[in-house]
Image (cartoon, rainbow, N blue to C red; front, side, top):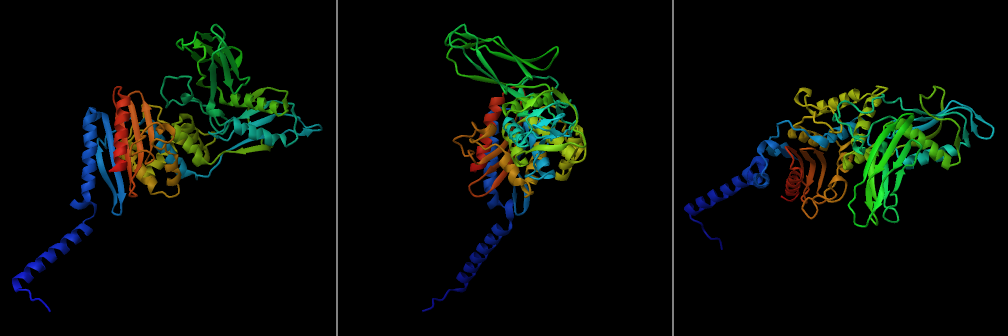
Length: 496
């Protein structure tokens, strides 16, 4: 039985139905700017503002930017001084990583070779020089030298009558560019660069107490090489005594290597301590280490270590190919390695035909990449590839644009993302963001100079969304407070 509906009731029912249909269409078609879809964005914006206000920082000290990408395109979710220029510190390495992964391919490998133009006489004697030819590999370490030497031994050569000649002519002779901070230190983060480099052009100095108070401290330099001369004046103090160890690097007239001086006191029973020092001459350092490794494999070198170039007629005797570029970029980004950043930039110049490669030529390649991303040269200052300079100036929005551009470049984005430290897991974020929504969900580059703190990268969400963010602090001190604020903000991006 059909129930009749009166005309007035029918009109009211029709009006309600039309209202519902219109509301549904509006919610569907309005997109991200509609009131319904903007509620989560408004909530996130309010939460970030609250975190900033509670931090107590002055507004001008913080440069903050958050954005994401939807079907409608890029959009900005949050900004505070997003268009103002700040010192980015090691956030600069985001530019370096993006440019080199774009210009080269993630599987690119650098070559280090042993070559010679000399003939091999009876008995396995090389009648001339052995040349160690550098290919600009930033990741070349002792294990790789061991591989290279092992391959060389299969040639049957057991003695070298001439010298070990180190050819690092792929790069120019400028070890430390003027674009770095002006004050030099002998720490590993201020290491020189060279086409033939090894162990990040640094040396490990291990210090242990002696058997009892009053004994000399036990000091080991690794790798142990004739290039290094150890002067150990450190002693062992009473158990529980305060540690007062000092390690310095210096030169000595008539000695081409570096002198490592250790002084002070280490308490009896104390655990081993390690100090990392840079070397002065990367080429000679690598050459002396080569002789040590050859000797360990039974190959004698009768000559000395010298600088030079491989003859045109030189033939390869052994070759080591580096790990893929993607993993080298990860070394740079996860541990914020300044040396690797500058080595990569000089290699950019060499790969584009500038040999010997110069830092200005490499930086020009970075500028070309930034131009491709959409940044105009006159709108930023970028003079140092590692960020170890106060001369770099970029806006949070510019770095955000770089992060968004990388997400749209399938040829390099996977490796770029993988290179970034993971919150609570590894790199410079290993001990940060633990037990927060950002643990494992935030991948970001850190930055630090005196009075400068940075954090920039991506925050993933369980619903599949990804937000790009750039947080920069430029102020006087308060680095710890800035780091804590940025961690809270990054965690908020991952959970809201």
